[in-house]
Length: 288
Ligand SMILES: Cc1cc2nc3c(=O)[nH]c(=O)nc-3n(C[C@H](O)[C@H](O)[C@H](O)COP(=O)(O)OP(=O)(O)OC[C@H]3O[C@@H](n4cnc5c(N)ncnc54)[C@H](O)[C@@H]3O)c2cc1C
Ligand code: FES
Image (cartoon, rainbow, N blue to C red; front, side, top):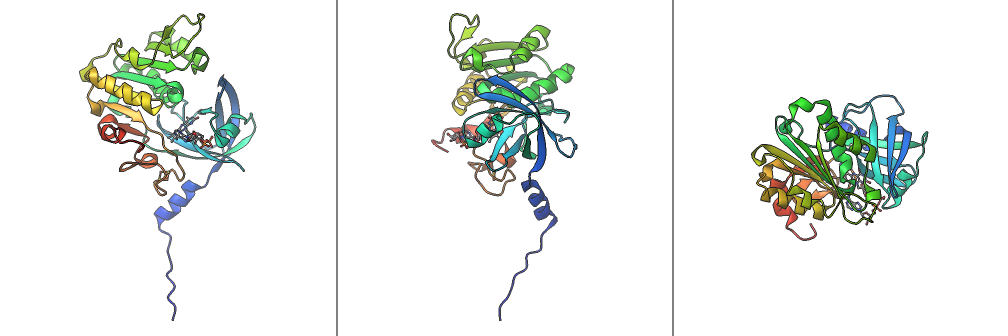
């Protein structure tokens, strides 16, 4: 006698399955930010807006090529769904080649974003390296829309070279508006660059904030985040008030496959934003 086990789908299974199926989206506009970086504004083909929190990400599919995790870098009101993408491999290359009107797949938003609520009434220090400004731009939009809720807000941003600085016109506007303090640096520059040369962590020494009442958000290459977080601790910001956005390869994005595991955390579900207090011991483990 054979026994056939019948698996009945629970409501959670159904929800998970729905989250695995990309919805159709269309490229609305395209902007080339830097030699290998493009910003795509997309709209859902069904017209239903996607609401998200700053720091969350979407899984974008180029049909016939593959899927990649990309942070949402627009204002968090669902009105404009914006992604800034660096061409590093097959999927990102295909994404940066899309043009207005082209269709793509979109699943999301996923993950836990930046702790905006916890930053209310505090000084906010945003430290970004390279493409790390993309998920932090959502935070800046949010802060600027609710400026009175925050104390001194400072953006420290470093790029490899002047051409790699993202969102240049917006940064100029933020600087002029005096709503936030902005300090920029580049790793390398020719004589035409009037600004600072050096790594972004060097800007932390001069930034003005009250360490006892500051929340720091850091995003960039992992090595930069490690040094930045250590420098922030030197400036007496508590590790529990420092947040980093971590990247690992994503597949399912809903906490099932384990591809994004970092210590005990699945970054798609428990992150990508986590406190330095949680991350510090893990960042010391080689090749984790
Ligand atoms: C939460 C999250 C948010 C992200 N947001 C953005 C974003 O806003 N813009 C953007 O351009 N990219 C972002 N990424 C990175 C992007 O998902 C990867 O670069 C993706 O693998 C690109 O796919 P690909 O096929 O083009 O390149 P692949 O062929 O997958 O990889 C090309 C190269 O990049 C390396 N790589 C792949 N994935 C990662 C990763 N996650 N971290 C570090 N190195 C990696 C590979 O080792 C390889 O050297 C994000 C990743 C995560 C996890
Ligand atoms: S990507 Fe599958 S568990 Fe995170």
